[in-house]
Picture 1 (cartoon, one colour):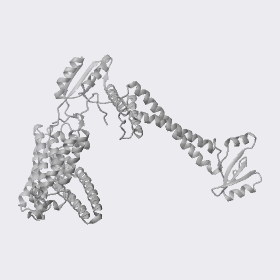
Picture 2 (picture 1 turned 90 degrees about the horizontal axis):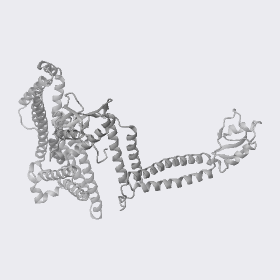
Picture 3 (picture 1 turned 180 degrees about the vertical axis):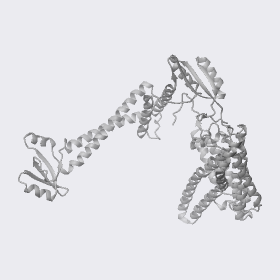
Picture 4 (picture 1 turned 90 degrees about the vertical axis):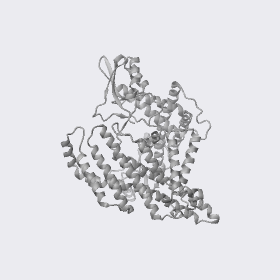
Length: 613
């Protein structure tokens, strides 16, 4: 259920601005209607802390170390002293790294000229010998030799080029690359590099000592983020010479708590229903005991229904669970997922929604795999009486054991897939009809038309794909009726007259025609539940067949093939759940229910107890 919101305005005197904001933050109910950017200092504090903590991860103790989490949480004063030391060390190390890079580049530049002392060359220059060094090609060297004004000494060749020392400089008519005399020689540069490396090692020791205070960094980052949120609220609050005020959204069921807090803190306040054209109303979903299990999937996908959109979390969970089981399709894989979930829960002592969801998904997968007779893709599993007794013959992936033809089995699974699709899409239409009826929106008749279209397209799919003997003319009559209802009533809206709605609907007739064809494609798309499940079975059977070819000492290779093959197949099945199982819920079903997932998350102004990503 999506909780109803109220718009609330809170007013206090300017002198009590901080007191008002602190009270609202402690109350933790008001979702600010507008959020301005926080002060720059508040943002930079969190950013710098986060960046520093990330850099220190490279110096953290080994995960197996018993003392990794033994460091106590530092007080604010102790942390700040340690933190500033880390920042100084980071700046120093950055400078040293740059110095080393520059020194290495200089050594690379001058090493071809061999060992020499720049200081001695400087002394010669002071004595009146203005020496310049050049590298010359063969032609340029001959030009320099023939020029009587050039006083030079030939040096050892470098990279097959002549090098010379010239008193003065070469004439401009002789093209040559002059060697810039360095400030320091190779020995001096090498010593500087060694000194810098020693200082870097000292900085690394500072980082290693600080890295054990990971918990302290997390505490300070949380404080910084809360300070950033407070700064944002402070910037958002408006004021004049006497009063300060701020507005936001409040869940209607929490209104009594807000009134009590307002009375206690002496705030003036007002409330009103949210505006019909307000598109920024936050969505707070109140999950049931079952529907809350799908919340981890919503969080991973980053989807949320809009405030005025229907809540389909329960139906999403039920269909997603079935799709998951059909796509994974193997009871053996379900057992592995169940064992892994139990092991994780036992080790971490966590029993959250994600863990319970995995429990449900693995159990339903085992059930589906059992009724189709699929255990790691092994046909030999059907030789076990107990496993064979669990199978529904028409669903069996090895139908020969039950006197069922392969064609009958495939048609049964495909019909089941189409039936699930038709039921889900029809449910979406009913959800949309219910919502529009409550809003007195006459376009609910168009959704009724889509409901008729879905039934007709379902029957048409059975006729064309499975070959069921159905009267085709009534099916096309249903499609025609559905098309007419959608065209005539699709443009209706509460703010339009009947004539205006009729005109808008007729104008969209061609679009409705295309959408009618698309409706057939949507029903057909549920065949992917059959196809992807069969593909997973075929892959597992292939790897089993490859492994069966190894005998004797080579059986070890066969075991490796089976392990790698099934592990790869499980990964591919999980990807298929995301690509196909989620898509059927988020697109086909949600689209039919009029859901666009445009929700703005309800994020009240409060003191957070964990860092928000």
